[in-house]
Amino acid sequence: MDEQVCRRCSRPVSAPARDYEIFEQMHYVCFHYEFEHDMGSGATDVDSDCGIPGCPSGLMPPVSPSSDAQQALRDITEALRDPYSPDAWRVEPHGPAELTMIRHGRSIRVIVADVPPEQS
Ligand SMILES: [Zn+2]
Ligand SMILES: [Zn+2]
Image 1 (cartoon, rainbow, N blue to C red):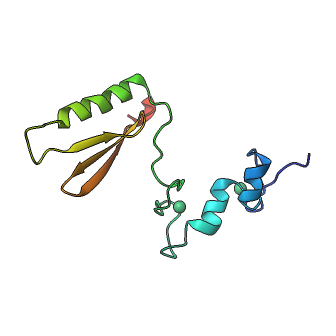
Image 2 (image 1 turned 45 degrees about the horizontal axis):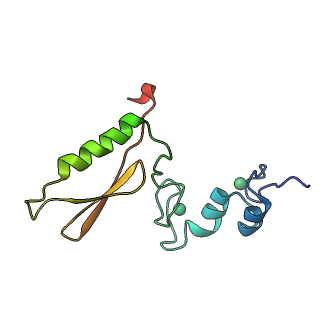
Image 3 (image 1 turned 90 degrees about the vertical axis):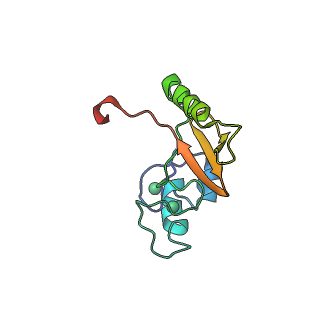
């Protein structure tokens, strides 16, 4: 089998052959920045989330947060819960590291991520 090489960055691509073809013989990330990231606005900085779900520049919820991080999310959910107040946030969990707070038609995403010790 020929080695898959990305047409944009010239590095090897480890994705399955099917994905390699779907993304026009590029990494998913390279494909995104080549074709998708600039679309809407025409000038989205590569460091900024372009709004397309899965944009690599967006904050990615961790797949397996630590038990401390998951507990923090439960604590937040519990702290926000107030069935007696019309102004209370409604909280919807999304996976182990993410929740959405909803109030008065506005939604706010909360993502917990473990920070490496040297950054805290
Ligand atoms: Zn690439
Ligand atoms: Zn993007």
